[in-house]
Amino acid sequence: MVKRPTWILIVILALVVGVYYILQNHALKKAEPTPTTTGNGLLITQADGVLQSVHIYDKKGNNFQMQRDLSKSWVITAPTSGVADQGLAGAAETQVGALRIVTALETSPEPSAVGLDVPASTLELGFASGKSHKIEVGSVSPTGSGYYVRYDGGKIYILSQSGIDALLNLLTAPPYPATATPSLTPESLSTSAPGIPSPTP
Image: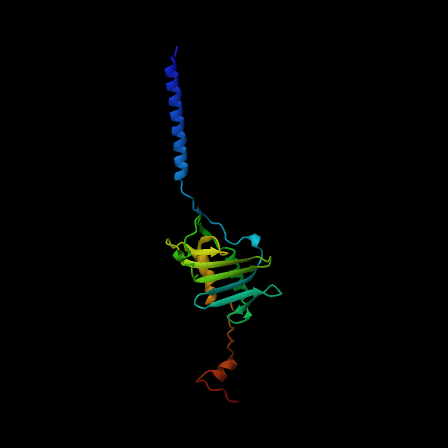
C-alpha cells in the first residue's frame, strides 16, 4: 500500500512537470518574431478594374500623363498633348498590372529611413471602376531587390525594381508615335541631294 506522503510527492511532481511544459510553450510562442511576408503577389489586381489614367511625376519637376479618350484609345496630356502609340501605351498598362510585391513589411519603417518623407517619384492611377491608387516611390532596398513604396498613403511595400523603372521611364520617354521618315525617290534624290545636278531636258 502506497503511503500518503508518496501520493503527495507524485501529485507535486506531476504539477511541476505540467507547469514546466506550459512555461516552455509560452516562451517559444513569445520568442517567435513577427513574420515578414514575401512572395509574388501583385499590387494592382483585376478587382481594380480597367486602367483609365496614369499620372507620373517626380521631385525634379518631370511630369507625364496619359488617359483613355471616348474611343478607349490612349492619349497623352503631358508633357505635351498628342495621340499615344497604342502599342507602347498598352505595354505601360500591362506593366501597371504586373507590379510585383517583393516584400510586404509587417511593421512600416520611418518614412525618412526609406526615402518616403519626400518621395522621389509618385504614380497616380485611375480606373474605369472609379477606384484610384497612389504609389509613392522611395529609395532602393538594401538588397537591391526593389523600391520602398507607400501605397495609398498607408502600407509600405518593397516592389520589383524593374517594374517601377519601366513606368518611371515614361517621364523621359513618353510613348508618342514614332516620326515617319519620308521615303526617298529618284526625283527627290535628283533635286535635293547635294552635289548631284538636276538632269536637263
